[in-house]
Amino acid sequence: MKNTSDISYALRLSPGNDLRLSIEKFVTENKIKAGWVVSCLGSLTKYSIRFANQNEPAIDNGYFEILTLTGTVSVNGCHLHITIVDDKGATIGGHLLNGCIIYATAEIVLTESANYIFTGEKDDATGWKELRINQK
Image (cartoon, rainbow, N blue to C red; front, side):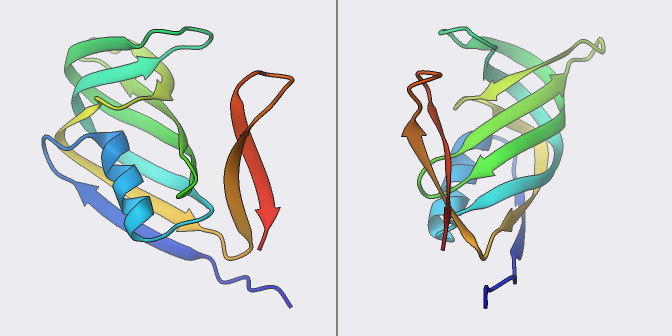
């Protein structure tokens, strides 16, 4: 019989924390092998996001609200996408990189699967390291 007791975690990041690095640290400390972001609300003073099919990050300073953060997390690697809005209502999003700095807070809920282990392996079709889902 499979263990179906998923575990939920809630964390709150403080001003000055790096969003991605903080999530990766939490995942490592809690030995999460297969998880995902349930929700994230908060704000940034700086973003570093890689847009679709671009090699270089887009970086800017200001005040940005986090509208969404989604993706998979694992001690084997995290794949996260973020959507933010600036003080004029312009919305952008893409691949979350290191360098997204918390302004006031980030309130994050993660869930860990009791049944899977996520790894990342190079996919010959895309050329990128892609999610591999393994049964426990």
